[in-house]
Image (cartoon, rainbow, N blue to C red; front, side):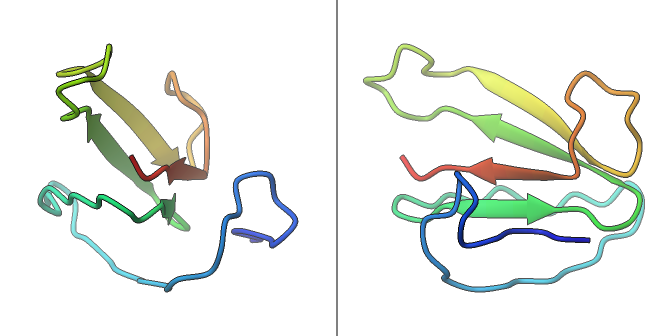
Length: 87
């Protein structure tokens, strides 16, 4: 599986790779990054990524977006990877 290439449109620069696993039903707490772009890839099963706009001056302030990332293609958002841009 190819995750990210330096000639991909969403590629900015390399920072780190952070592999992790989770058991079904486990929540990996809230994360906030002011100057970091996150690229999530689920290589097995599914994960739910929940995004919250905390920028008080944003027209989307308070909005929540849910993305389903992984193997199955039966959800509203069909992807194996997603990019969460810095704010």
